[in-house]
Length: 313
Length: 257
Image 1 (cartoon, each protein chain N blue to C red):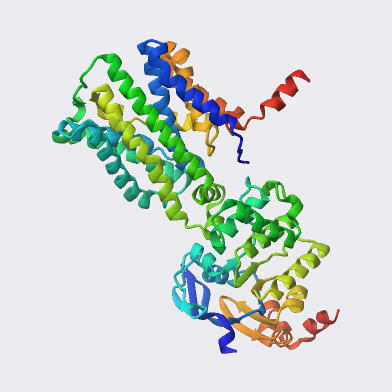
Image 2: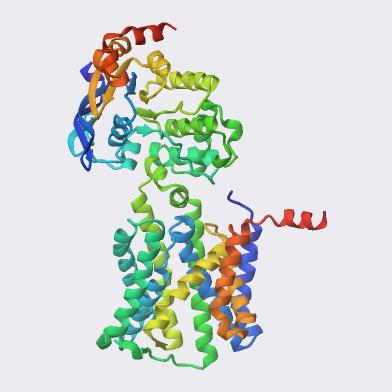
């Protein structure tokens, strides 16, 4: 089931280098897309821990990103240096996910999904109601970074790439360890996993925390990047949905799936989807339906050689 | 005898709503013996196994395992302590290979290794023991029912249990398959593992068990050596109704077949 082939790693290295070289090869628009690809790859890999490996359909990703955005923005506005604010945001998000996980991970399946959607709603309502801290519905301005747009763009591109790389390394470590193996067992049959000596509550919590930490940093970095955040943008269900679709598109519970899926969806979005602004979400819906019908295991699980043989044979 | 006791249940009770599924049940298991647990449908056999393996916590009573109290343990803790069980309806990890299924038991329950490669080798040994080595790389969902039951056994053995509870491992098997399963259970017993077996086939229970426990309406109505138990009027009444109590012959005859 698990491959130990080396070439996917080279392919990934080439992909990361290509993204990293975008400032020198292309215009600002493409650099921005490269940044988005890296960002979504990291978000998708985060979702993969809980949604892919553990099989828990979490919508909490948007709550983590939103909480990270607001924590980072508020701390930065309070005078904390940018990088420290990002780190602090990650810590806040981890504390949040660790404590909330103990509660909502007791639910399973659809109930868990609904519980995690509630987290996103609670987040956006809190952000829009707690005006004294968050600026309420008007949103929050974050200090704009010094330097020209090229320099700022590059800083965020490399930040997102670094987070993506960290998320990838974490994925590889988890995938090869007892933790990843245990999570796969939980995904397959939680009761049986419990019976075989897996501390399922602990494992699910670790997966949930892993799914939050990079989202926290990304949220904070995103807030610094766009310099303005609002409740609905930060706590966006659509973001979680995209993360899940990316993972499912690439292959859930695999090392490379989220990266393939995020690249595919962002490129698809920028080339085709952005031309149909009014049908935007309808198209995403269509993608989800097609995905479930024709690619239930994701692009990476398709046996391409067989398809090729069928076509030519 | 007392030193040999590995598991001791004291006055266990569990009720669901108004139903006393298990009521004031006390018994003990000794090292290495095979104990049959019988009783009519709904007698509380599976509930009792669930209590002993930590799936549910008793309302009253205590469970002592190897000298320490484990009454409110969680299933994963029971597994790590060496209390293994199989399910009436087999519970594999369907999309994982047969080998990976057993590896999970090696890694998480037996604590012998955390290294996936070592676990692989150990798991293979258990698979050859139950005769599934050739199917190691297939996914568990492709197995036939008899093979799935074997997989359950391999998983349980990989946990290196002290006590193994078998919940109807023979249900759904034909006569030849049952014979094979029995041989396997005897082999497991020879390894020194205490076995508690829930079984509907009386022939199987009587030929395997050193001792038999009989549950009826959640209560332990009889226990002792197999022949005494099946001739106990209370047991005959539980199975066949009071009419038959006087006609013990019925059971005796069926034994001599």
